[in-house]
Image (cartoon, rainbow, N blue to C red; front, side, top):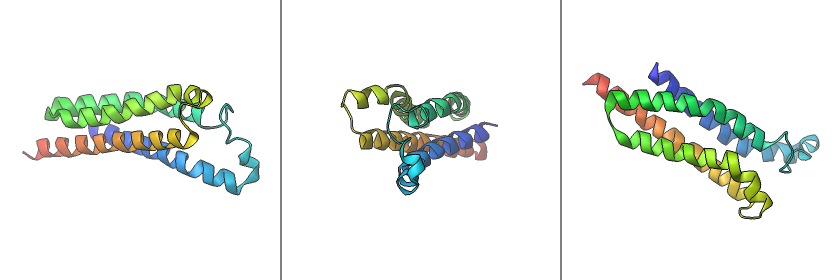
Length: 136
């Protein structure tokens, strides 16, 4: 069951990264979507990141806590939590940071992708440690 949660968390992080990369490309190709690229528009990224975070948080926490109880290794928990913290921070505060010109749009995208990758790596480590524990 824990493996299913880890894999789901990895998939959701990947979905978020794909969204961040693909949406601007699609928007530049399809003029109809171009109007939705501007931040502040409810159709775009902020609602998506906040919505997907509602799934990522509980799934990740269940997988990480269950994995830690099994293998007692802190590194997967720390790595995934760091990625999760980046994702949460961006989902909650990126719009304000962009409006205040603290970060450019590219910075928001880069932080989101980085957070998603770090989060996924933490879950991959969690899966590996859990498998090692069950083999021995």
